[in-house]
Image 1 (cartoon, rainbow, N blue to C red):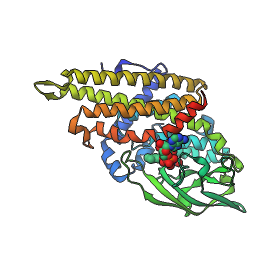
Image 2: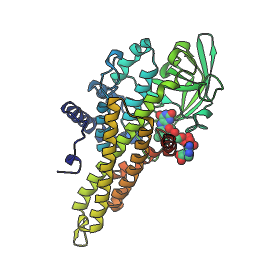
Image 3: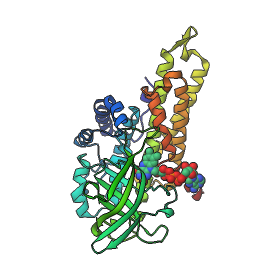
Image 4: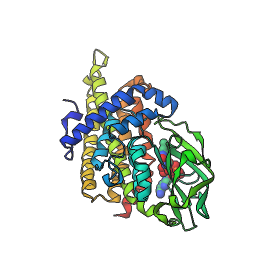
Length: 384
Ligand SMILES: Cc1cc2nc3c(=O)[nH]c(=O)nc-3n(C[C@H](O)[C@H](O)[C@H](O)COP(=O)(O)OP(=O)(O)OC[C@H]3O[C@@H](n4cnc5c(N)ncnc54)[C@H](O)[C@@H]3O)c2cc1C
């Protein structure tokens, strides 16, 4: 029995096990074999998104009455884990199938939901959430993109950067300033990107990891958005609705962090048992066993934290502070554990084709996006 098989999360059910099998098959058949191609192209084949939609893997926790599958965070967590176990990130599940649809669900009117949700759930409409700007990431009060009302439309000018699915997205939830009030002056707009000439993708950025995703710079050049696409129907009304989304996004980063660390441990155990040197296996060195025992214990501590918080999320009691604790601590442990495991692979661990190298490259961003870990610690400290 391997490290992963030796533990079952307390929130896991038979139904969720079946979903895990479906997700595993999806990643094994449609993503993993083509991961190198997707990383090279910096985007995934849209047919893969449609296949995910057919299998019911997109927008799983969108309520049924809005056209979603009516699942819970546990459904999303299962798929996040399965993706992490496959060591690939090209199918942008957390930003694209979980987070951006959740932003949409929070801010869309019933009519907008009826129009877009079926397409999102079918994998036909890829979504993006555009908040970050060249001069503003952690400090939202510094947001500069401006939306000015002209009759029945808003005209938006500014620039966004680091936007996941910036090129592929059909629908973008865009943050822009409608007044000078630091936070309350920020509004959210739904942008039909393919029918908006003012939404201009400047560049798909070259990254050190997560290369299967189109992370973009976007220029907003007199972008016209109908007034009915202002979220919540009132200026400055959008952001107050997003706390739930940020909380679950941070927990999902923690879930993927621990699952990636667990996978790295499995890979390192297997490799060190196979690798011969000095007339024995790598596993036979006490150092190897001590290092992997430390990694396994820390990953299990993270697993238990994440599991406890998933259960709190399911019962509706997870706090912002707890999600921030999990996001920061689990992503730090993910990077430490994967680094330790990669060392055991020697030069092979540095070769991009090896799954351990992919885990390493894709891990680093987890300490930065979804709120930098320093910001997470500020959130935690606020609750002390
Ligand atoms: C691959 C990738 C995908 C992304 N996807 C998206 C997306 O889809 N949509 C989107 O809107 N954004 C996205 N982002 C942006 C991401 O959320 C930001 O990069 C992140 O919030 C940090 O902002 P910044 O890069 O401007 O860094 P800055 O805000 O300049 O922060 C730099 C560093 O300063 C330190 N720091 C910041 N605040 C504090 C503090 N309060 N106390 C102490 N130290 C602090 C931290 O070390 C931080 O890493 C993505 C980024 C990347 C790299």
